[in-house]
Image (cartoon, rainbow, N blue to C red):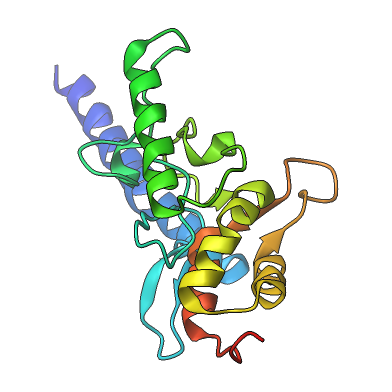
Length: 196
């Protein structure tokens, strides 16, 4: 019996050491050396170094003077990275229709003069529920509201949107997009002359 226990205990100790200490330390060292920003969460920081979020995880904005993010379906609260996932509501589910209707009403209430069609990404959650981006169409839909409430010239605001937009990855994959947190932080930091 002891002839089995000693090799088993030795293998347990060795594998615990390799997989529980050596491998994680090696991967951490490589990640911190080659990809420090990504390894530390792709954080967005203020000028004084305070982390305000990640460029990979959305945040909720409901004040009309900000650009609003894509809705999140995570629980128990929106943009919960520990509970990433969609609502799993199908297109014929009345709960999805009710949620979309409520989101459209909230957008219309924040900007009653806007008669443009509401972009779908402003009323439907992504598969992860964490999407930090909106489409350029969703940013354009909100532009007049934000410009009016902040008393900013629309042309200048459009330039700010463009500065916080990303194109297709490697020019091929994905769609053009706007990072909402970066845009709203840039909006707060910018000083615009009063519109004519």
